[in-house]
Image 1: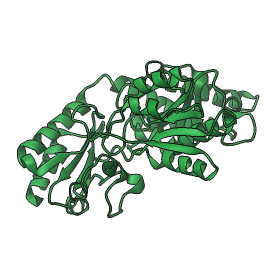
Image 2 (image 1 turned 45 degrees about the horizontal axis):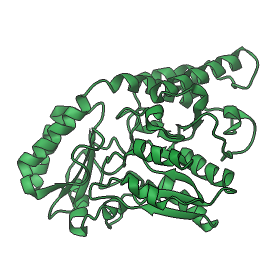
Image 3 (image 1 turned 180 degrees about the horizontal axis):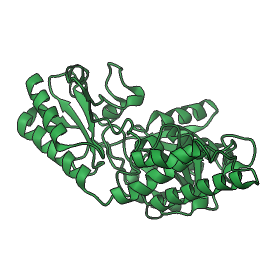
Length: 369
């Protein structure tokens, strides 16, 4: 199998697996226990928390471990909504968010909250000025993804944060697709909340984290005992916490290598040379994740192409809502026509992709098209 669907999920790094193993066997203590096994488990969690914080450039106390990106998004959005509803019930988001942001917002709409949905340009990028136009004296939160899971489009989060802070409004960004692929520094971004998902950066599925800026209080999503500094109840998932920490440590080093970007650029160059005006890039030519190519093959069905690409894993959109014979909501928001959009295939490369694999994919695409 040639795997070009790293935006859907990544394989677990072998070094991450090795870090997990001791906590599957001997070191099984409850971190809340006062004996030696409990203390060892507690130490492992705090080390992992420091590793995550190191990648995001924040304090370990600002990192909350969760079950993944969806929980982190729900915790931030609902937490702000319920905690600050006395100040207002208006939230601003965008039309291209992941369902893990869109659906919590729709839930809040049913509870009487007002949600404004920002448009995007032809490249799938938000105009920060549009954010400021939507702000009212009842706005309590802006939530805009750091990068889009389908096109890889990078959003101007730094500019949006300056607008939010000028108006004393909290800012959340879903960086699930970005962490590990590009530098994500919460100090430079100026965000108050940031979501990350472990299975997007070579850790297991079922683990994630939420960055919460120091001094920001929100109502917990899960109530119970005082785990995670009283912010998320439930006995800690030591094995997966350790895995995420190790994955972040590895990612910090991997970011120094341009290999994935170079291979993605090579792939795009090959596509352009071979198919010329028979393909269309959905997204910005430069302001996108270095591993992502969303390509429409004009006159073809993306789903049909994938079905004929034997032993090649790619996607016609986000794996979370694929299989629908309709235009992707993201491409629709970008103004992509139905004819062009239905020919879209998302190729997302990763740490283990090779040039030989790209050459094989090009050969098979050439035979089909």
